[in-house]
Length: 310
Ligand code: SF4
Ligand SMILES: [Fe+2]
Image (cartoon, rainbow, N blue to C red; front, side, top):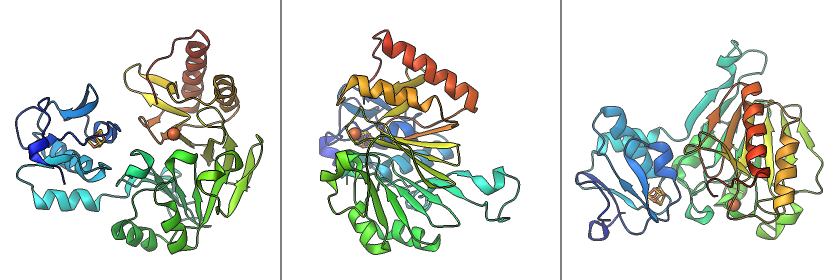
């Protein structure tokens, strides 16, 4: 729980505040951008939530914060409960999009799990409900609430680990659900007992709907997961950057720049509409527009315009 004695002076006065234990992971700014902002090495409240939806988002941020740095002086238990119930948070209902929910085995949902883990520096994790077996992409905190939600949706068959930094509580979820953990050999020291190790740089067709794409650069063993040629789970390889209103690659923590760029170029060959990162903003654009954004990103990168950091 946040400690009011450690409340940062950068917070606007009012019910919500951030304390000095904040690790500046950005989660609150993604979930409640109307209330939280980056301020030096921390986040802080720059505007107290006013409307019902702003309060709801602020409680989602409070619950997702990996280190419990967000506090409310007078908690609204009903809104807090509703915000807690919102996780896993539906990003898109694939069956409805196709106009045939529940028909022909095409129904599938993509969720952001919330409850980010300090073990992965507050990285986002995702859940894909699929008729042939569900996937977890990186892992949130291990919480009974999430375990129950995953159980209700049919459990977890595979846990895709984008790279060594964002393992979170994957081993506990794997054990509970008997799930296979997938990681690249180059990052496998972080999960040496993973059940499925990916080698080399070739794209792996895991099933007709899932493609595993090695994207070394941020780390030697970084991987992306392309689901139904629509959703690209990118780990810390690539994200949307709200400041430049464009895509960005990892900047500060880079294992090898040349590999990072080659990995981004490889993505030009693949169709996708969603970028779903570990750190940074999600984005949904038509596939041709997303490809154009990727070209612009590569041009900026080659010109040495390194904007924003991962
Ligand atoms: S979610 Fe928590 S740790 Fe992350 S930036 Fe916000 S207050 Fe800081
Ligand atoms: Fe990382």
